[in-house]
Amino acid sequence: MKSYKLRIMNGKLGETEDEGVEENKQSAVKILICDDDPAFRKLVRSYLRSADKGFVLKEAGQKEEIQKALDKGGIDLVLMDILMPEKSGVEWLEEIVEKRIAPVVMLTGFGSEEIAVQSIREGAIDYIPKDHLTKDRLLNTIKLTLEIWKRKLAEEEKRRLLEELGTKNAELKKAMEHMADLEEVTRMKTDFLSITSHELRTPLTPMKSQLQMLRDGYMGKLNERQEKSIETVLRNLTRLEKLIEDILDLSRIEAGKIKLSFESMNINDAIREAIKMQETSAKEKNIEISAKLAEMPNIIGDADRLGQAIGNLLNNAIKFSEEKGKVIIETKRLGKNVQVSITDYGTGIAKADQKKLFSPFSQVDTTLEREHEGTGLGLAIAKGIIQAHNGKIWVESELGKGSTFCFSIPINQKITEKEAPYIG
Image (cartoon, rainbow, N blue to C red; front, side):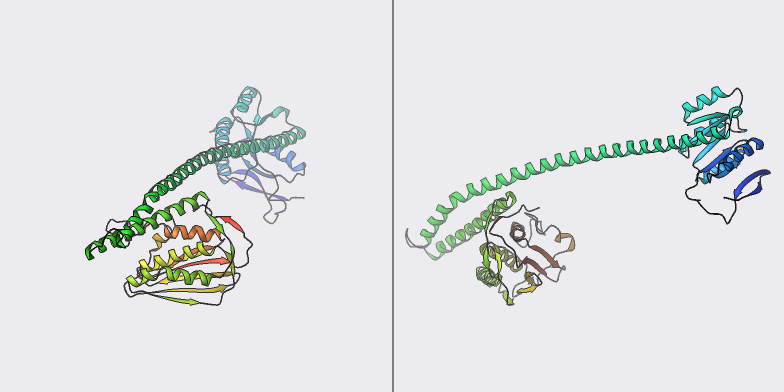
């Protein structure tokens, strides 16, 4: 049984719980009784206490007391007399409803029932005429009011969640429409690159053949100046062929149409072949390529395509190395993966630029006066090839201190044929 003690506040007799009594404090219904008649408050209090429901009761007879109780909060239900001094019960009702403090039951005297009915329209849950107040009616009204309030809160929460869901659905629909637009743009770009590349490549083959015949003297002997001119044209044609092939590879990868032939292979063999392919570029800058190849297990992969990815990474390292520099390519086994790392001691890459390195057509230096030539396709293609092998690729770099590009590929995986994924 809950015990009580009486206290005097602002000249008014009030009721509070014993300081040491805390049982059921969290679950007990907290009721604020607002009435300027102490005798009526005492009657309500006696009804509620005798019900043995564990109600926590607070009383207020003056404006300051009511305001203090409302500001403090923690109220589950308010019993409010309509005819309060200084500030009427209807005015208090407006404040309580606006602030959503608690459900309100209005207490009406003789002749004020019309106001009580109006208060229902203003937000009160119910009302009780004072001259009809009984213990059963009071308890039933409190029970019904709390149930109605609970349902009301649940319905409002449901409406809020439905509105939020509607908003999220609208945002999702908009995002999906935007994604569809992006996919269409990407498809159009891929088709354009593929068609354009094929159209560009078609006349290159006869052009190159004719120039090689000129260089080899099939159409008459050339002087030294003419030979140098032909070599320059052929060298640039070769660069153009490489660019076109890169664009074609990228368009195939983006479309998921680049076929890979998987078989047992050793990554070290692919590295040795890639180094041979890059020897000319390295010699032009007098750069040493040092290979530190550990004994590696075979993996399932496309040797040609992995060689292409490694070649792109080596070419990138050579391009950004200083004259007479050094590039180190290293392999090692890490758990269930083989890992390849290619290190240069060139310009390095700022943190802000590292995020965009593997995006198609990405260039760290985009100025017209940039020192290093390139289309920004090599790393994007390497990423697509590595991802098609269920691998990962990343870069570790610091501006002014060089870069290390790494990739890893699982050792034990069963793949027979696969298409390279879209480069995101």
